[in-house]
Length: 87
Image 1 (cartoon, one colour):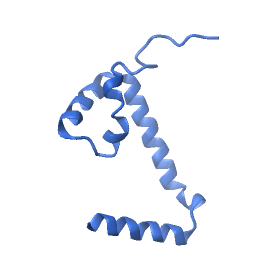
Image 2 (cartoon, one colour; image 1 turned 135 degrees about the vertical axis):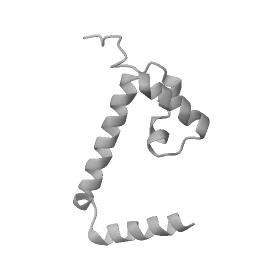
Image 3 (cartoon, helix red, strand yellow; image 1 turned 45 degrees about the horizontal axis):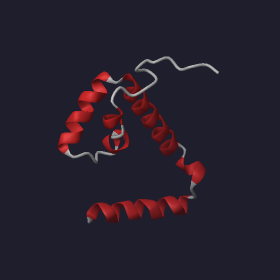
Image 4 (tube, helix red, strand yellow; image 1 turned 60 degrees about the vertical axis):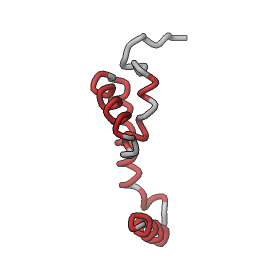
């Protein structure tokens, strides 16, 4: 069994901040955590890579949503998104 190198490319250098990745991407971090995470992201290659992968996955899902949902389901989803945004 091969051991992973102990490099920031393979591990988050500050997991207590790296756990905010999804909330950061979703724009859901309070200001203090946002500033802390952005500083962390500047130095943490692992989180930079994870963010890029997350963005790639979400982009692919958006592009291929017609492969997963019928046009009727997409219309319902769009209507729900608009009504939620209006609240």
